[in-house]
Image 1 (cartoon, rainbow, N blue to C red):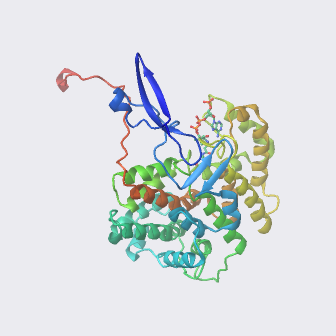
Image 2 (cartoon, rainbow, N blue to C red):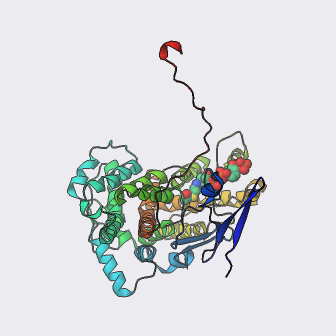
Image 3 (cartoon, rainbow, N blue to C red):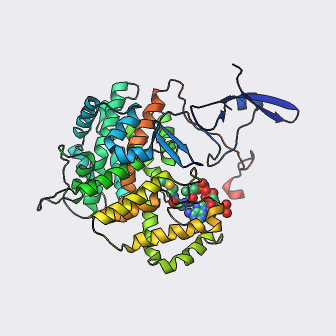
Length: 429
Ligand code: ACO
């Protein structure tokens, strides 16, 4: 079979580069020999046309609104699976059998405790510290405690670190919340499922009996499933870049937490709910739509738009349905924020500006409404996203380290600074 080639012409010279096909999705032009052949680099700030790796974990078709984890549609996983099963799938490539699932669940629940000395770290933070600041610090600090799982050349250590991160991140995030509200930490309980355990660590207090509502636990689990992975987004690429230098896994995931924090990425769920509340009533929507369309105004509709999805975000659909279900089951009727969200979505989707730019609600548009109804403050939203995405980060990190052709990530640049010049002594400047 003849290899497909792409031809590049510069002046009177032509160069050829192989075209590689994946299992599905657009082909890529393999330009690894570009510099050697031409003495030039590509220029693609923001990586809008750059595939940074090959991966068999998650597939997105942004035009059709498709999201697959290991081939399974996100809608099916959200409806029929659960977060720990999805975690196993992302990590290992296949859905677990019953014994495999039982074994995995046991492994995760046996690693939920944090080292007791890490607990002391929390009191070093100000009470009003953002949960993401604490999460970032606490996850990075794990590399100082779990030395028996930081040798990345040992597959068993990589596996232990992966399980520890997935198991300990709910405790880390829940305690960041408890610390911020001045309540005692609630230790994990291994007889509860993953989501119920997290909710209990967030909302139980020693003085009262705490029952986890199955509705709320289901909604929490679905939010985790929908956020578990999303191929090479900013935070995942950050984890991969950090990992490419063979940094230990705890440090790499801490880097991912930091990258997720920004409002253009994981911080959008917090910003989206704040915006919906600020709008307040449907009659004020027009004013905000006009601001979003005004190029001289930096305001954007938070929870709208996506680098990859140019049709709809399949996660947003599931999230919208879950929001309605949860509010209904919790007896929250006439929720003004949900009303504003639904009306804003309806108006924006008919507006020429949003249609032309293919801007649709993303996963973060509705997730904040559910988290708010469950009882989380907005400051916890991104930390909950980080909790779920840890599974994706760890899976992508492991895939990278397992790849024998893996190299350190080292982009180049278009230098636009001063040319070489002579140093001038301070007396002569
Ligand atoms: N509101 C108004 N206009 C928007 C919005 C928005 N939310 N998003 C994009 N646009 C406009 C831009 O102004 C730009 O217009 P122009 O062509 O006239 O300059 C055009 O649409 C393209 O936008 P870019 O910023 O170039 O698109 P990019 O792919 O780089 O950005 C991003 C994607 C960051 C998600 C962007 O849409 C945004 O800022 N959205 C709001 C924040 C948000 O919801 N982030 C969550 C992303 S999902 C996630 O991380 C889980």
